Length: 547
Image 1 (cartoon, helix red, strand yellow):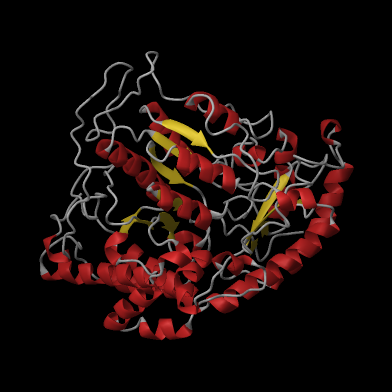
Image 2: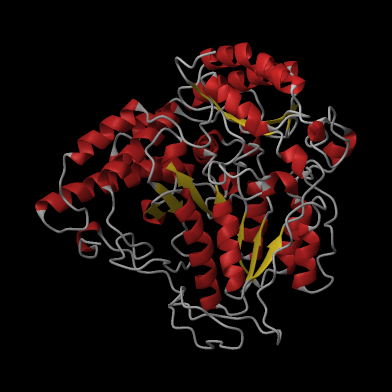
């Protein structure tokens, strides 16, 4: 089957650039000025940047000053965890705990491990048998460690399985405990727009947007109003309701996951929360981030997000229809869908092919003109089992048998028609040539993918409740963190090591010099950072252009 017209089903890795974003990029690229310069060209570029910032802020119902543009989702996650945790500990040295889940993107887990090296302790949230975070247990831990937590970070939509985590409830628990909460929402652009715009509908159940009915709370009158700056500010105030979407949280997003360009993302960080920069230079982004602001990328980001919001109602329904059809095709070849009965993004589906190796099937599909992936592109290319999948209880063999299918703004039923033609043939071919050590034809029950997200009473009852693997009040942090991590399969990666030195005192680097190596015992008891939020600069007084 020669590849003539490729069918792209890997939008969770990257999507095609929307035409409106391409045009916005071209228009902005005609302006030569550096947006941090004070001359006429610089001021013109600054107007483009700030207009884009306001557009994104309106769609999210946040203050534009809370948006820091970054190079993408990874940098936004790094800035949130490392910059947020360091600033919190500088303000209060007792805040040396970080809580996250074993299901996070490597951008979060990698940053968490960096913090462990700096003397922070890491708590991994327990999971339910269904494959979601155990909300009750996590909330208990947040309340128990409220005085010691620097930050809680939980992904909204998992980048491999598409399973949606109960971030609204966890954010509420963190807010009640006075703890900062961050969420990686890179794979959740539709959810972000729906969540932060639905307050106008006074919807009591924001999670219902993922019910599978294609329902959205987006109000077209908001889009019309957003064309006027004054109306945008008024609309934002009307939508700002703390009981709906927890606006006092931080979150990361990335343009290239919603039809924008690569190389631009954003961190939304409440202005009253302290945040320490993790790179150094001109401090162009409110002293939270240094580097020349890429005007064309920012303009294209805003244009793509605005179009997504305008089309949201139809987009949700269209993506759900695509996912429903994909489910039928996967059922037809005996695949096992991870999280099938759980709340999932309609854009991402992860399926296991028992007895096969996912990479083999991916290569054959690629040769047939169908682009899919075995998992996150950030770790793809290396034939190893995903830590996130193994955290759900899969064995290495099971985790290596899967493929991820993901949709975007230009996905269509034509793509699935091509998949329907190729998939059964290729699966049959691989099963005939199955290696002797990969002959499993069925997956064991309970704690295995066949039960992940099943609709059994046990799974339903344990979805977001239950007892943590270890009592929150027992043991020290090292024991508890290891126990929570051990709530997954025995073949899961080793628990993180806690960053305490041999004397039991946490290593604490100077907050103003985050890259300075720290050895046990060389504690800086008087950090030189300023934990207070920096004053907001006006566009005309931004630091000098350069970098």
